[in-house]
Image (cartoon, rainbow, N blue to C red):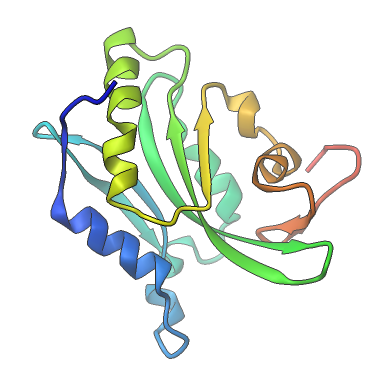
Length: 164
């Protein structure tokens, strides 16, 4: 079910900036996380975090901190990881955070508007729906949602015990 909501023009521009990172660009100005929500009945940018904003922070834990227990949101995350083949990957991960404890009307609004936002971001490889913090409570669980061959997520090795 589509909600008929409009997506702000700058959303597509931010997505393209994140998708097409240039090698000669200042890495401190690189956009790592964008939070989208409803502003004046449009989906728009609520917050964006650059590499320099996250300097010295565990980026994955910061991402987790954005998952408020009673508030739905969309998050686009420039996730860095290593695979078993020892290749380093940087891929955009789109997530709808729709916690069970959020108001029903808000959950319905976010769920029905997700496709409109995704259309503004063509070519997304990872599309997650997270309804409970347990859906991404560890690096192992999050990495498993991205693919089975990830061995290191955001600078931390994956632990075979699931305790990352």
